[in-house]
Image (cartoon, rainbow, N blue to C red; front, side, top):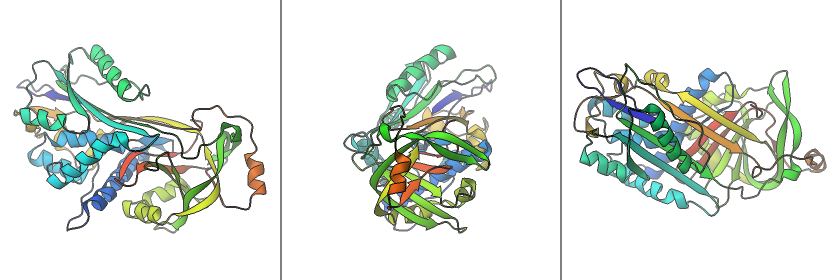
Length: 411
């Protein structure tokens, strides 16, 4: 995630800032804060996914709501007036609420140590052009928020700045940077601030897939289009359930845990092979996902899951505008005075890059006997041999690290 902010002096020079917004509200009343935020973050993930997936015509999609939320929270520290209200409405909560602030601060502090064999990290750096004034209060707030920091940069040299930003991102992503972060100058002006956040996750399955059990099997991408794809296999104890969405579509929901059991991959697969995934997705809500995950039961199953690797690049400005988040992008209306104590900053870009890879520890596929095992077995099976939906999530906190869908594992 990249955010670039420019200050708008009398010459009306444009600015850059990258942010990602979702439209929902925190519930009122005296409900449990953890439960509220868990549902809220799931709803944020779904809205972001649906907004990003709609124009992509059923291609593979992945997006990182955790990285989105972090940048948006940082931005809230600088937003005021109607701009701040739009951000609070879009995000669904405000970091200025002390209960929310304390809860999120605690969660961010524990994420790097979330479980044995699992490493996850959210990080954010604000690159600052020399001479750009910053409010001491703003600096203090972001320096204490989710592994965030300030770093000087020469933003008047975009090429050199991109190299520096990418080097930082590569360090945070442990060599798995999802692509170069770039921006364009607007109106011949240069940005004065660039906010870049990253989310990294690395883990192994609690029960690993063996590359010896991977083989080429059919995957139905669309009616009349069947491809042979590397399909992983294991017989395992998993959490599984069969449910019905609001429109009556039957789905199978499978949860595959990673080491430490604090993070899992949740898979949603239409049970009827003739039901397109696009018919199920519009009916997914945070409350439905919560009901489903709370109702999963332990089962011993044959599990077939294709290896897949997805990398996406989104410009989210139009999505944010469609949700009514408009002041941020208007040089005359944006109020980010909390950043420096002065008027003049506004948002001109919204860029998001995300990547996920699911495999049996990166091994190459080889000939196996998965089909034979299935034929000999009388136990239930989950076979993701057609488009499916996925969450990479931490159920206890509601953090959704990645959300997306696989329409063609070979893309």
